[in-house]
Image (cartoon, rainbow, N blue to C red; front, side):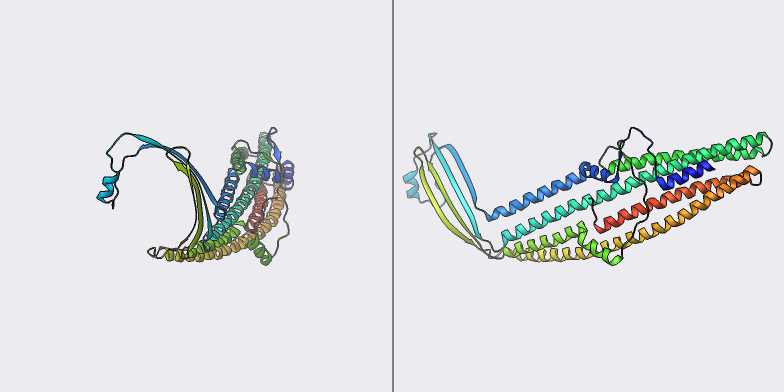
Length: 436
């Protein structure tokens, strides 16, 4: 009984002891940093940021001159062939029959064009690309926040699993001691043989509970490895313990914090800005486009090449496009409304998540208090049952019930402390509190 009580107290107050000496131990902060470096989701989100940043440069390029260089060499026949509208006299003048005679043709040209005024086409594209870049950056931070939450939950799951294994090992040790005690009492004729059988059953059940706890521990360790972006058999050993309850904030300030910090909500605001850029671009399709173009080229059948240059302006205005341009405006307006409504919907969801997480923390704290009381009473009850059985007043059923209740109470206390750690992680995630 003393051994069980001491082990339960040690597990409840001090946490798990590493069971693999060759496994590296890491703190929670170290595990999070490893995950942020190795998890492929972070690499994918970083790649999306790089792509969005490149798209911003593409959009800005429309403000700058466009320069093209062309070089060509062609060898072809020069047989005359009339085109539609050629008069018979002209054809008779130039047509000399067909021949395989051929000649080279050289060309080199430099073209420059510059948009002067497009009434918002380029500006809208730039605003869209910039908003998409900001959304990608917020998405990257949101992915980091998700990994932070996943690692924290998995990290404390492993700690709780190790605590459960330690408790089950203590239960097996006590069950074996009670079996040895029952056998000795039966040998001297002070207890019936059924006491031995009952203790053998209790020992078997304790060993089964230990086996299940160890299997669950391995699964939990694999989940931690996956959350960190590691192979399932390379999970590190947690070096921390399940903590104690901390101070909770008030709902109002927490809701304000969440609406200002949640990265997915900020990314949704970026989608609103992108839809406004699309609307600006769509409206610009209804207006003219003024551009400047020039070229300088050298061409001839032989050397030296003959040069020509040109400088001109072009004003283009869509008169009728089958209603497509105005339809684009209406579509962009509808997309902006949808984006605004998505913001409102997500804000409601964020508020609900903060409320639920805060309630979860309060419930978990109450569970810790109740589980601690139950654990103390269960250990006291086990001590009484062992004393009664030793003096011959109690029976084996009472002893086994007390032992089972003490084990379950210790497990419940571990579970309550684990639930509290996960509740804290959920609240931090709901508030948009990311890794350091």
